[in-house]
Image (cartoon, rainbow, N blue to C red; front, side):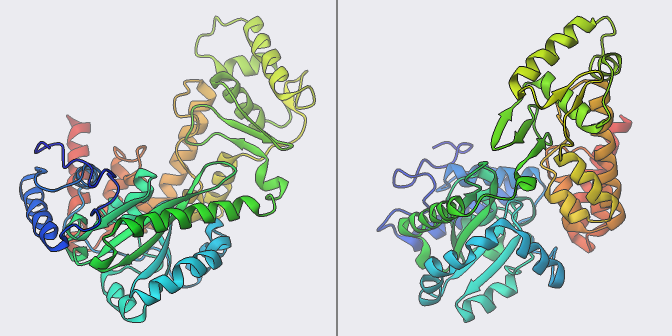
Length: 427
């Protein structure tokens, strides 16, 4: 192990905090010493696993403080509505059946979070839950790494891997008395990350069995989701182009991953149900005005062969039927003020690597609309979702709004980031 690299895998599994039979008290002393060193000097040393060291570094880059505290982003009626619509609501009975008795009997908690680290359900032993309430480990609170530092549910969704976090491996000092193990849960049809299932409690959870247990629970949940009736066609079919360079077109039970140029063509045609002429498509697609109509016709011919003859029409070029799109849904949600829903369905900019002139305009317009709505709402949790996302880390306006929305000292890190970005832009 090097000071920069972190400890090697514990007991052969890098995601397990303690091997069976390890001295938990001795390990906790080592970890608290290592945590102090990192907090004071930014160096990783001592008995720190690489997964934890990497998480600590992410926390430092995100300007998370070791004294951070949780905040509730969604509560009351909004939380109930969000939970009812969330895909993991369908497997909550399974979670309660498999984890409930284990949590209650062992004085632990069952927690389920969404893909952004927001806690949706926290249930279990009454006394343990009262202690967790004091930490803000409650439904509706954000426990993403970017807010609460290293913790099992937040790190599980950040790494998209099952992980166990013990004692002072937590980045927040207030969480050092706790141990947790969490595993991500995915949509079995699409592979999309839905959230994570977590077991949280005291040092007794620092055992390889607890991580193996939540792994098995997550797999069982995915199996049950796979056995459920397929979603209605309207939910399954559509064009998905946010946060990806190659769009996915789903129709009639088929999911087709498109090349970059075909992705651009379908995005433009979906925006113009009445159709576009060849000249209009050329203007929208190509920066180089010397591209010939023959090149475009060849692309359209290949696209028609890929999609089938009944999807793409010509004279003008158009789709045979309207297509629901993820970017269109996000724009509608912003327009009616459903900002939380819009952000939850926004995995990233529209075809982020595309330089096609019309795609660039559509991408910037949607991002500007969503950004403006977030700033106008002034919700610190939603602003943090954007600011700490890859596309928002250099967004000065959002960082300024986040600094203004956070009370007192909690806004200091965001304000420092905003001032640094402002200086860079002026520089």
